[in-house]
Length: 75
Image (cartoon, rainbow, N blue to C red; front, top):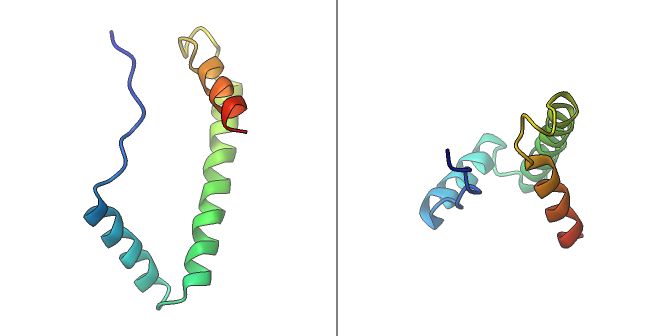
């Protein structure tokens, strides 16, 4: 069984169209769109923290440790 690699970024055109759709959803208000993205990021970080607490190190096959090391090297 192989480990899943990190997701690759969306192609430029696809990412741009998603960004444009988000901005349209907020009637062109960039500040509101960015606030919504930041809020969602906080929600996802919280969900990830809860999942890490609920899943054992063995079950995750060491994923916890790799994520912690990635955060330490980026910070």
